[in-house]
Image 1 (cartoon, rainbow, N blue to C red):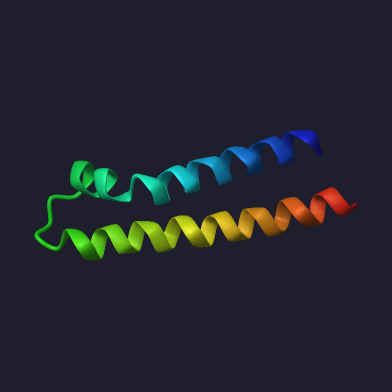
Image 2 (cartoon, rainbow, N blue to C red):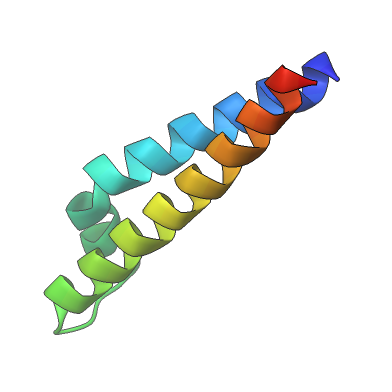
Length: 63
């Protein structure tokens, strides 16, 4: 169970980093003309993953 919690914390940290560095990630990985749309999608995806993993982590901590 501890390994799952550690993996969830790592995924949460990666998603927060993706939210913070979304523009840099978008510039590096995507060469599209619409940088704002790519940046917004990376931020939304990072936020959703962060929330889901946080909820799972809280549920695992209570049990």
